[in-house]
Image 1 (spheres, helix red, strand yellow):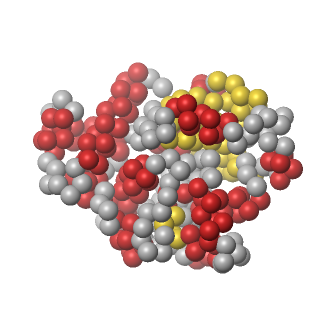
Image 2 (cartoon, helix red, strand yellow):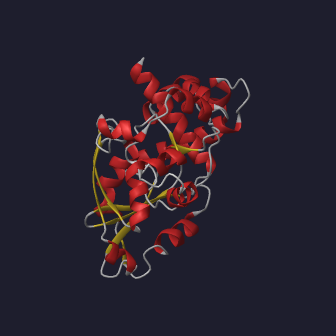
Amino acid sequence: MEQKDSYHYHVMARAITEIDARQGEAASLADIATALDMSPAHFQRLFSAWVGVSPKRYHQYLTLDHARHLLRDRFTTLETAAEVGLSGTSRLHDLFVRWEAMTPGNFARGGAGLTIRWGWFDSTFGPVLSMATDRGLCGLAFAAESGREAAMDDLTSRWPTAHYVEDAATIAAWTTAALTTRGDARLHMIGAPFQIKVWEALLRIPSGHVTTYSEIASSIGHPKAVRAVGTAVGRNPVSLLIPCHRALRKSGGLGGYHWGLPVKRALLAVEGARADAISA
Protein backbone atom coordinates (compact mmCIF):
# COMPACT_ATOMS: atom_id res chain seq x y z
CA MET A 1 0.00 0.00 0.00
CA GLU A 2 1.34 3.46 -0.84
CA GLN A 3 2.85 5.52 1.99
CA LYS A 4 0.19 8.25 1.62
CA ASP A 5 -2.62 5.72 1.88
CA SER A 6 -0.99 4.15 4.95
CA TYR A 7 -0.75 7.57 6.61
CA HIS A 8 -4.42 8.32 5.95
CA TYR A 9 -5.52 4.93 7.30
CA HIS A 10 -3.61 5.62 10.53
CA VAL A 11 -5.16 9.07 10.82
CA MET A 12 -8.66 7.70 10.32
CA ALA A 13 -8.03 4.94 12.86
CA ARG A 14 -7.01 7.61 15.38
CA ALA A 15 -10.08 9.68 14.48
CA ILE A 16 -12.44 6.75 15.04
CA THR A 17 -10.76 6.10 18.40
CA GLU A 18 -11.22 9.78 19.36
CA ILE A 19 -14.89 9.77 18.38
CA ASP A 20 -15.47 6.47 20.15
CA ALA A 21 -13.98 7.88 23.36
CA ARG A 22 -16.43 10.80 23.27
CA GLN A 23 -19.65 8.78 23.29
CA GLY A 24 -22.35 10.56 25.24
CA GLU A 25 -20.61 13.91 24.79
CA ALA A 26 -21.44 16.72 22.42
CA ALA A 27 -18.22 16.10 20.56
CA SER A 28 -17.44 19.00 18.26
CA LEU A 29 -15.67 18.70 14.94
CA ALA A 30 -13.14 21.30 16.11
CA ASP A 31 -12.29 19.33 19.27
CA ILE A 32 -11.65 16.11 17.37
CA ALA A 33 -9.68 17.89 14.65
CA THR A 34 -7.54 19.61 17.30
CA ALA A 35 -6.78 16.26 18.93
CA LEU A 36 -5.49 15.10 15.54
CA ASP A 37 -3.53 18.31 14.87
CA MET A 38 -5.66 19.10 11.82
CA SER A 39 -7.90 21.97 10.78
CA PRO A 40 -11.64 21.22 11.10
CA ALA A 41 -12.20 21.71 7.36
CA HIS A 42 -9.37 19.38 6.35
CA PHE A 43 -10.42 16.76 8.89
CA GLN A 44 -14.02 16.88 7.67
CA ARG A 45 -12.96 16.34 4.04
CA LEU A 46 -10.48 13.57 4.84
CA PHE A 47 -12.80 11.64 7.16
CA SER A 48 -15.73 11.83 4.75
CA ALA A 49 -13.57 10.66 1.85
CA TRP A 50 -12.01 7.71 3.67
CA VAL A 51 -14.81 6.51 5.95
CA GLY A 52 -17.69 7.32 3.59
CA VAL A 53 -19.75 9.44 5.99
CA SER A 54 -19.16 12.70 7.84
CA PRO A 55 -17.63 12.68 11.36
CA LYS A 56 -20.89 14.07 12.78
CA ARG A 57 -22.99 11.38 11.12
CA TYR A 58 -20.62 8.67 12.28
CA HIS A 59 -20.77 9.96 15.87
CA GLN A 60 -24.57 9.93 15.76
CA TYR A 61 -24.57 6.25 14.82
CA LEU A 62 -21.88 5.25 17.30
CA THR A 63 -24.20 5.04 20.29
CA LEU A 64 -24.81 2.19 22.69
CA ASP A 65 -28.43 1.78 21.59
CA HIS A 66 -27.63 1.74 17.87
CA ALA A 67 -27.91 -2.05 17.84
CA ARG A 68 -31.49 -1.84 19.13
CA HIS A 69 -32.39 0.68 16.43
CA LEU A 70 -30.90 -1.64 13.81
CA LEU A 71 -32.98 -4.55 15.05
CA ARG A 72 -36.09 -2.38 14.95
CA ASP A 73 -35.52 -0.68 11.61
CA ARG A 74 -33.08 -2.84 9.62
CA PHE A 75 -33.74 -6.39 10.75
CA THR A 76 -33.20 -8.94 8.00
CA THR A 77 -35.18 -12.15 7.77
CA LEU A 78 -32.66 -14.39 6.07
CA GLU A 79 -35.17 -16.57 4.22
CA THR A 80 -36.70 -13.44 2.68
CA ALA A 81 -33.25 -12.06 1.91
CA ALA A 82 -32.41 -15.19 -0.06
CA GLU A 83 -35.65 -14.99 -2.05
CA VAL A 84 -35.07 -11.39 -3.13
CA GLY A 85 -31.41 -11.93 -3.96
CA LEU A 86 -29.79 -10.20 -0.99
CA SER A 87 -26.79 -12.48 -1.09
CA GLY A 88 -23.04 -12.02 -1.28
CA THR A 89 -23.14 -10.14 -4.58
CA SER A 90 -25.32 -7.30 -3.27
CA ARG A 91 -24.58 -6.91 0.42
CA LEU A 92 -21.51 -4.71 -0.01
CA HIS A 93 -22.89 -2.37 -2.67
CA ASP A 94 -20.34 -2.43 -5.48
CA LEU A 95 -18.16 -5.21 -4.03
CA PHE A 96 -18.54 -8.47 -5.92
CA VAL A 97 -17.72 -11.49 -3.77
CA ARG A 98 -17.15 -14.86 -5.41
CA TRP A 99 -16.78 -17.65 -2.91
CA GLU A 100 -16.34 -21.37 -2.57
CA ALA A 101 -16.00 -23.69 0.40
CA MET A 102 -13.29 -26.20 1.15
CA THR A 103 -14.40 -29.83 1.24
CA PRO A 104 -14.90 -31.36 4.71
CA GLY A 105 -12.05 -33.79 4.06
CA ASN A 106 -9.57 -31.03 3.34
CA PHE A 107 -10.68 -29.11 6.42
CA ALA A 108 -10.25 -32.20 8.59
CA ARG A 109 -6.61 -32.43 7.49
CA GLY A 110 -5.91 -29.01 8.96
CA GLY A 111 -5.04 -27.33 5.68
CA ALA A 112 -2.53 -29.97 4.56
CA GLY A 113 -1.38 -29.29 1.01
CA LEU A 114 -2.54 -25.67 1.09
CA THR A 115 -0.25 -22.71 0.51
CA ILE A 116 -1.58 -19.68 2.38
CA ARG A 117 -0.09 -16.30 1.54
CA TRP A 118 -0.32 -13.55 4.14
CA GLY A 119 0.44 -9.89 4.72
CA TRP A 120 -0.36 -6.91 6.93
CA PHE A 121 -2.52 -4.04 5.70
CA ASP A 122 -3.81 -0.76 7.11
CA SER A 123 -7.51 -0.04 7.55
CA THR A 124 -9.67 2.61 9.17
CA PHE A 125 -10.27 0.07 11.96
CA GLY A 126 -6.60 -0.57 12.62
CA PRO A 127 -4.07 -3.12 11.30
CA VAL A 128 -5.49 -6.08 9.39
CA LEU A 129 -3.86 -9.46 8.86
CA SER A 130 -4.94 -10.91 5.51
CA MET A 131 -4.51 -14.50 4.37
CA ALA A 132 -5.44 -16.17 1.08
CA THR A 133 -5.14 -19.41 -0.83
CA ASP A 134 -4.97 -19.42 -4.60
CA ARG A 135 -8.81 -19.57 -4.56
CA GLY A 136 -9.44 -16.49 -2.44
CA LEU A 137 -9.22 -14.82 0.96
CA CYS A 138 -9.43 -17.30 3.82
CA GLY A 139 -8.57 -15.00 6.72
CA LEU A 140 -9.01 -11.33 7.67
CA ALA A 141 -8.20 -10.45 11.26
CA PHE A 142 -8.50 -7.03 12.90
CA ALA A 143 -5.56 -6.71 15.28
CA ALA A 144 -6.29 -3.42 17.03
CA GLU A 145 -7.56 -5.15 20.17
CA SER A 146 -5.61 -8.43 20.21
CA GLY A 147 -2.29 -7.27 18.80
CA ARG A 148 -0.45 -8.57 15.74
CA GLU A 149 1.15 -11.62 17.31
CA ALA A 150 -2.15 -12.87 18.75
CA ALA A 151 -3.94 -12.33 15.43
CA MET A 152 -1.26 -14.30 13.60
CA ASP A 153 -1.41 -17.14 16.15
CA ASP A 154 -5.21 -17.16 15.93
CA LEU A 155 -5.40 -17.62 12.17
CA THR A 156 -2.47 -19.99 11.72
CA SER A 157 -3.80 -22.27 14.48
CA ARG A 158 -6.93 -22.90 12.41
CA TRP A 159 -4.97 -24.58 9.59
CA PRO A 160 -1.85 -25.84 11.38
CA THR A 161 -0.55 -28.05 8.58
CA ALA A 162 -0.77 -25.43 5.82
CA HIS A 163 2.35 -23.85 4.30
CA TYR A 164 2.50 -20.12 5.05
CA VAL A 165 4.28 -17.59 2.84
CA GLU A 166 4.55 -13.86 3.53
CA ASP A 167 3.43 -12.27 0.26
CA ALA A 168 1.32 -9.14 0.70
CA ALA A 169 1.70 -8.07 -2.92
CA THR A 170 -0.04 -11.15 -4.35
CA ILE A 171 -3.12 -10.81 -2.13
CA ALA A 172 -3.26 -7.00 -2.09
CA ALA A 173 -6.01 -6.62 -4.72
CA TRP A 174 -8.45 -8.96 -2.96
CA THR A 175 -7.64 -7.42 0.42
CA THR A 176 -8.06 -3.85 -0.79
CA ALA A 177 -11.40 -4.77 -2.38
CA ALA A 178 -12.57 -6.22 0.93
CA LEU A 179 -11.47 -3.21 2.97
CA THR A 180 -12.74 -0.51 0.62
CA THR A 181 -15.81 -2.31 -0.86
CA ARG A 182 -14.48 -1.39 -4.31
CA GLY A 183 -13.32 -4.01 -6.77
CA ASP A 184 -13.56 -7.80 -6.87
CA ALA A 185 -12.85 -10.07 -3.92
CA ARG A 186 -12.67 -13.83 -3.92
CA LEU A 187 -13.44 -15.74 -0.75
CA HIS A 188 -12.31 -19.25 0.17
CA MET A 189 -14.21 -20.51 3.23
CA ILE A 190 -12.26 -23.10 5.21
CA GLY A 191 -14.31 -24.61 8.00
CA ALA A 192 -16.39 -27.51 9.24
CA PRO A 193 -19.68 -28.14 7.39
CA PHE A 194 -21.86 -26.63 10.17
CA GLN A 195 -19.63 -23.55 10.36
CA ILE A 196 -19.85 -23.02 6.60
CA LYS A 197 -23.66 -23.18 6.73
CA VAL A 198 -23.62 -20.42 9.33
CA TRP A 199 -21.14 -18.35 7.34
CA GLU A 200 -23.28 -18.73 4.20
CA ALA A 201 -26.21 -17.32 6.19
CA LEU A 202 -24.08 -14.35 7.26
CA LEU A 203 -23.33 -13.65 3.60
CA ARG A 204 -27.05 -13.03 3.04
CA ILE A 205 -27.16 -10.08 5.46
CA PRO A 206 -27.01 -6.84 3.44
CA SER A 207 -24.68 -4.03 4.47
CA GLY A 208 -26.40 -1.69 6.92
CA HIS A 209 -28.72 -4.45 8.16
CA VAL A 210 -28.53 -6.96 11.01
CA THR A 211 -30.06 -10.24 12.09
CA THR A 212 -30.06 -12.38 15.23
CA TYR A 213 -28.33 -15.59 16.21
CA SER A 214 -31.71 -17.31 16.52
CA GLU A 215 -32.70 -16.14 13.02
CA ILE A 216 -29.50 -17.65 11.63
CA ALA A 217 -30.19 -20.91 13.45
CA SER A 218 -33.68 -21.10 11.93
CA SER A 219 -32.45 -20.26 8.44
CA ILE A 220 -30.00 -23.19 8.40
CA GLY A 221 -32.59 -25.65 9.68
CA HIS A 222 -31.37 -25.89 13.29
CA PRO A 223 -33.67 -23.53 15.25
CA LYS A 224 -32.58 -24.89 18.63
CA ALA A 225 -28.87 -24.62 17.93
CA VAL A 226 -28.55 -20.94 18.86
CA ARG A 227 -25.53 -21.50 21.10
CA ALA A 228 -23.74 -23.56 18.43
CA VAL A 229 -24.54 -20.85 15.86
CA GLY A 230 -23.05 -18.23 18.15
CA THR A 231 -19.88 -20.29 18.43
CA ALA A 232 -19.67 -20.69 14.64
CA VAL A 233 -20.21 -16.96 14.15
CA GLY A 234 -17.38 -16.27 16.57
CA ARG A 235 -15.09 -18.69 14.75
CA ASN A 236 -15.49 -16.94 11.41
CA PRO A 237 -11.91 -16.32 10.21
CA VAL A 238 -12.80 -13.76 7.51
CA SER A 239 -13.98 -10.63 9.26
CA LEU A 240 -15.84 -8.03 7.20
CA LEU A 241 -16.32 -10.18 4.08
CA ILE A 242 -18.25 -12.76 6.09
CA PRO A 243 -20.07 -10.14 8.18
CA CYS A 244 -20.31 -11.72 11.63
CA HIS A 245 -20.52 -8.20 13.08
CA ARG A 246 -24.10 -8.05 11.74
CA ALA A 247 -25.30 -10.82 14.09
CA LEU A 248 -26.89 -9.50 17.29
CA ARG A 249 -28.72 -10.85 20.29
CA LYS A 250 -32.53 -10.79 20.28
CA SER A 251 -32.40 -8.32 23.16
CA GLY A 252 -30.58 -5.80 21.02
CA GLY A 253 -27.27 -6.45 22.73
CA LEU A 254 -24.19 -6.53 20.56
CA GLY A 255 -23.20 -10.00 21.69
CA GLY A 256 -19.56 -10.89 21.30
CA TYR A 257 -17.08 -10.15 18.55
CA HIS A 258 -13.92 -12.14 18.07
CA TRP A 259 -11.88 -9.10 17.02
CA GLY A 260 -13.12 -6.77 19.79
CA LEU A 261 -16.45 -5.04 20.50
CA PRO A 262 -15.10 -1.54 19.69
CA VAL A 263 -14.44 -2.76 16.12
CA LYS A 264 -17.94 -4.30 15.91
CA ARG A 265 -19.61 -1.08 17.05
CA ALA A 266 -17.54 0.96 14.60
CA LEU A 267 -18.37 -1.35 11.69
CA LEU A 268 -22.11 -1.22 12.44
CA ALA A 269 -22.01 2.55 12.81
CA VAL A 270 -20.25 3.09 9.49
CA GLU A 271 -22.49 0.67 7.60
CA GLY A 272 -25.67 2.06 9.14
CA ALA A 273 -24.74 5.63 8.32
CA ARG A 274 -23.76 4.72 4.74
CA ALA A 275 -26.98 2.79 4.18
CA ASP A 276 -29.13 5.67 5.41
CA ALA A 277 -27.17 8.17 3.32
CA ILE A 278 -27.75 6.05 0.20
CA SER A 279 -31.48 5.64 0.85
CA ALA A 280 -32.03 9.29 1.77
